[in-house]
Image (cartoon, rainbow, N blue to C red; front, side):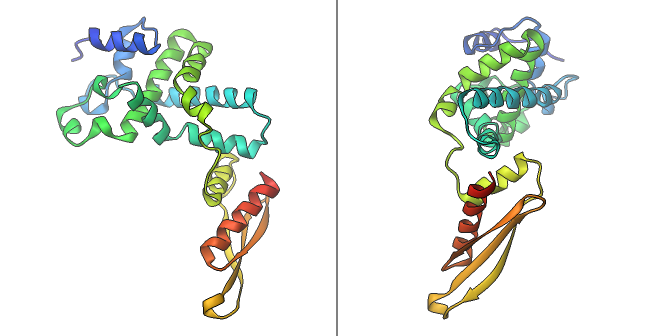
Amino acid sequence: MSGGLSPEARAWLEATGYTVRDEALWQAALTHGSMGEARDYERLEFLGDRVLGLAIADWLYARSDAPEGRLSQRLNALVSRAMCARIARGIGLAEHIRISKQAHADGGRDSDNILGDVMESLLGAQFLEHGFASARDLVHVLWRPALESGAGVKKHPKSALQEWAAGSRRKPPEYEVVDRSGPDHAAKFTVRVSVHRVGEAEGSASSKGEAEKAAAKAFMEKYA
């Protein structure tokens, strides 16, 4: 059975910017499923994921005139599991996660998945107790270095296109070599990339990989 939220955990939460009222809620937000308790962070993580996405979207929309595709690219980078884990490490979350000895021994406290999930579950708890405005403001504080550093602005063109398609709820991009010319030592590849119900673009280079990169870049410039 749970012994209640520890004084250390409560002090850390409040020092980080969270506001604790219902200790059982915050206890659940910090509890991994390996503890076998009636309440853990999974449902709160589901909620917090949506809170985080809306909070970041709100920030990007208010501070950028970029088109939808580029906003989606940045949003996906800023709410990624890796970014959530990075924020979690920065605020010292790991030591406050309630996790079984076995899961801890297996590296659970340093898992991007677990750190990211708990980060989101805490946002879910903040939202439930204090509403969206409070949770949004906390996201803006905790994510400010990443937001202001331009995270997600520069990406490999193929990664950017993949994320744009996902963020726009489109099918994944498809690449096809449509032409290969020249001798082996000076070959030229032309690749066409297409996204269903959006369009297509082509790119040429001396290797298939570079041609795919050029095609993805051309697609983003044309449609995103």
